[in-house]
Length: 357
Ligand SMILES: *[C@@H]1O[C@H](CO)[C@@H](O)[C@H](O)[C@H]1NC(C)=O
Image (cartoon, protein in one colour):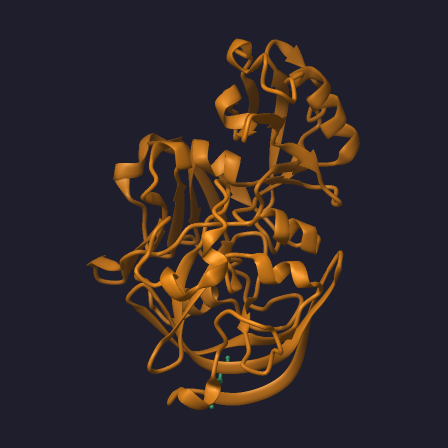
């Protein structure tokens, strides 16, 4: 989720945290749900979109609740500031928090459509039952456009585990959680469910481990590199046709902040030509070709149900242009494959995938 605001906007997520429960020391499962006790007074939450996932965090003491998009494609946490002249929605009120420590340094995140602006503050962040003290984050005061007001979430929670955001210099929350021993196991995992499978539980993020209920078999791990955990994907087939787009290896990140699977435009055109889904869904039931690719020498397949977005009688491929030269496997991929980010080996990040259930 590093690319453009339209990307954020497209990522229009709609899940809510309905309950929080600890299942053991320093493990936190965050169910992402479509209904919550809290959404009654959050107007923007009425626009439900199947492909949008978010959960709730608390900022400050006592905790002020915010719905955030948990985004493995970015670094920083931002929530709207009371100083943001936005007409509605939740806003962080630092004066109401006993644990607030001012910083005030200006911060800016550039998106395609403009800049999200604000300043840095330092406070306690509660994620499920895990408390992260003295965490810096951005109090946003200005957005790149008004579309962001329509989003059902209040802010974005970057899940990168690098030591400093390359944009703001802030230590990402997940890095703080690991460094300060907030989690005993340096692992988090994401399970996302199809909206059509359940109107209630939308998915789950586990900080400190994995939830065996939501995957089958063992994870296939790949060593990832760089600030957003990039790895290689090979042998991209549509049905039996080798598209050759990743013969030499494509650079890929798993991006929970993207509603699509994005890749370089010329390659996406090539893939979508092979898919040939009718916009009116007339051939949807006849589509049988799986899309497959390899990661760490293991083949992963996506069925038409995974790679076609079917909404209001319209069908389209989830393969979409990216402005970057790397691929982003967004929520359609995570729905098919439960994904784990494993930081247990010092200096190495491994990303693992197992069939979701
Ligand atoms: C937050 O404030 C505390 C107390 O002043 C300070 O020790 C800590 O370094 C600050 N956190 C960061 C990440 O700067």
